[in-house]
Image (cartoon, rainbow, N blue to C red):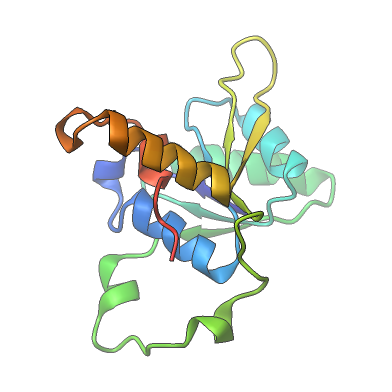
Length: 166
């Protein structure tokens, strides 16, 4: 499982849709974690979903939140690696070698694969993960496109997860 913690899309160098799409192409499951969670809730989500690698934006508040969650987990022997969110040139510069996707894919990617994991708000209890299959995510995207125009798309993060299938 791959966690993604970031502050706002405007602060990320690549953007959440690109990061999620690239994660999905490799066979990883993106799991965007809301920055509104407490340290204990973030540690709980990481452990519950067996997250061992996380991309974290360079925002100081996010770095601190993630560092504290790692410290909580480390006390129980749970290891979590944090990486900076890639810059545009990390993914798209001329120096980056084009590697066939089959060489980096860690598991097959099908319509029955979990495409992304969201989580509940955690207002009444700890946040709970919500697994979304690829087929359901694509159906949701098609349904939204039929009902709205691009100018009326919601601007929240979950919208950016739709239609990133190969």
